[in-house]
Image 1 (cartoon, one colour):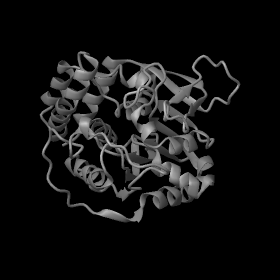
Image 2 (cartoon, rainbow, N blue to C red; image 1 turned 180 degrees about the horizontal axis):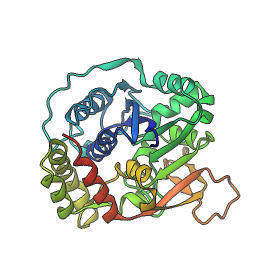
Image 3 (cartoon, rainbow, N blue to C red; image 1 turned 135 degrees about the vertical axis):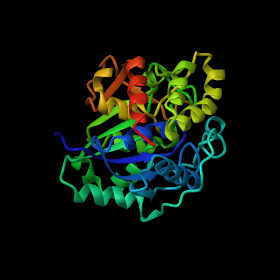
Image 4 (tube, rainbow, N blue to C red; image 1 turned 30 degrees about the vertical axis):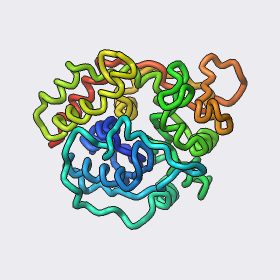
Length: 315
């Protein structure tokens, strides 16, 4: 029997990231979650750390430790997305205040010390949020890049371009310097961009499947996504809103549902017009090193089957 994969999760929940957390939390035989690092992003850090603890308790996993990350990006003021996720970041569901504690150690120190302590190549960084905390950890101790098993991140776009500006995807735009540092670190990186997440639409029929589970997390998933989809339905005019975050654990569980290519990806950090744009050399027209497994397509039916089957395991 294969041992559970050791992971550190960075997250700024966010309804879609709540669903990603549910998938990770539901499968302890697949994912050994060493810790969750709350990130400032979709909403401020005071709320993302609370949201993370609320979700862990809802999923019956208060054994997982939550650490406080940086309250702002590495070099810039924080940009948030209350216009999508609501003033609490998890609007659409009413959860009680969490009782589980925050850890005293900072999230950045936790990442560094864990990667230095654990055997090389044994810990994967699962990044659902802006890359601030991993960037700060790399800045503090560059040697951790060679000790990671890899980084699997929801970030960037090429074919779909931007969702927060015409040129940039939100997670990269919030902290382009952190994304740039991670991409240049030499770590083994897999990127799940808007190009694939925009294919994973939460249609009414798919939301009904979550609701029909009848468990706490299934009902919360349906309620949260019903709230957050309003912005995207108006914006895109599609039959459902894209469900971004769970693409990361879905890829880790069933990479056969996705199609990727090794390419070079760089981040624009200077231009006022295209700040945060991920320049993906999909056609390999440069000789820049191929630093990313870039996921271009996925199977939406298989994706939602996997999510429903997994969330069914939770309370």
